[in-house]
Image 1 (cartoon, rainbow, N blue to C red):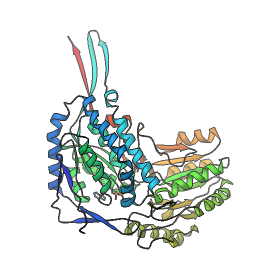
Image 2: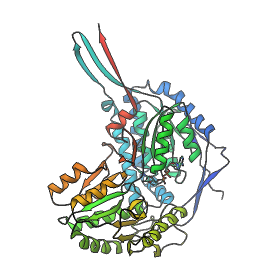
Image 3: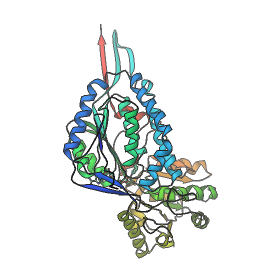
Length: 481
Ligand code: NAD
């Protein structure tokens, strides 16, 4: 049987792509071929932007309470197909079914919040800013927006953006990761069924060329990007130099501080879930755990015991708690980091390279390094795999200094029973998604999502109320009659 070649969804129709090159998509757990992503270029991006632009003229005039009816229908369809979607996420990305179900739930929650647009889009008004003069501000849609997504949450991440954009009256072009195009294929089938007018939501398949065409296209007002920091910076610079507003969410090296007074059982459970859940392919994953003083020995023992419970395998199989990495090149990269960690003198406490699993899949088991220095590759670079580093320190000040010295600042947590330590952490940590006694500092759909420093390029974060700022212009009227 010929491999399925993905299509674009433009102007309400599924269209074959004429792109000469494709990216082959395989199940990362067993190598099973799933299909081919056409690597579209500027021509197909232009067709999608034109369709979106022409739909905007009508869509922006649809009353907001009517616009969100389409989102209510989409939410119902997503609920109906949530299980199918979770299986697709697992098959194309590798994460376990329960992780996929969780990510689909988080995606649906975005649609729920965007359905609140009639309230959330409201402006402000004040009478008599001078005698007899009134002032009001309204939010207006801007036109066509686009998102560019990473491989690690194929259903959820694009849903961080387009429900909000279209609720505000904009139209949209979505470019999923070429490595995982099937989840958005199903979501766009549901979008079609939900009855959005043609051109309001469009899907273009592709890689670098499609991205660069979106960044430079004069018909696009704004870009939402999620992916690695070097690409985030490229997206930010290029799109901004073409006059667009940009929110570009980048990579991470997340520090977790463990104080001697922490509830160690709670800390160990949360940290191992954070480091090894989704095989470490999460922008909120624990990367470096920093035990303070005598927390070190107890934490290390606890993590060792917990890591023995991890069951590596195909995420669709019962009882498996950790799936494969996304691809052979990514596995090679993660294994390369482990080799370099050993060469740099870190202590390899648990070696995930020898894991027993299907040799056709890209498996690396949970891996633990101790005595990791900030100048080592494993201590400095984003590994994006199930590799946890321990960097012990003597005091909370040392722990905070280590955390703050890193150029990335996506998420960070502290485990402690002391309000004073928690307050010191909260006050000075750079990461803008921070948590106390929680391993994955993930904001819900009604809050903003995004990091700081080299983990985020732009100003307004994803989802929550900030989405309504990103996707609108705030126009002010001053009137005297
Ligand atoms: P990536 O940067 O390789 O790719 C992201 C997107 O950019 C894809 O759609 C890809 O087609 C495109 N792309 C890749 N290289 C490009 C280039 N040179 N020019 C133009 N376009 C390019 O990221 P990934 O490997 O798919 O995802 C993993 C990364 O995403 C990690 O760094 C992770 O931390 C990050 N991430 C961040 C968040 C966050 O909220 N900050 C969330 C999820 C993932």
